[in-house]
Length: 85
Image (tube, rainbow, N blue to C red):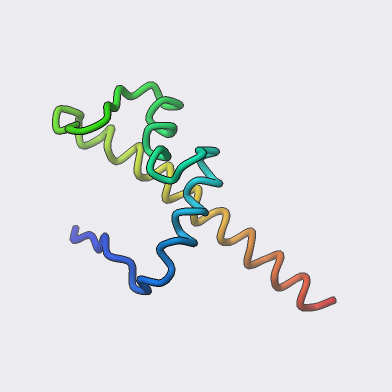
């Protein structure tokens, strides 16, 4: 399956980084993957991590991405509720 890791709207990078930090409860978006890995008991180091299994890498990224989507849905629901008031 082909993956598109490039965001479609480059100006959204800052907002996505803030959302990533929020859902992972990390102080810095670049630390989000380490927080997620630690929560799941996966050894992830600064720098090269080519030795981890693809399954573990997917669990780390999937948890972050899934949490981001869930949060965006909640934000959209809230925005629609507020619009109806």
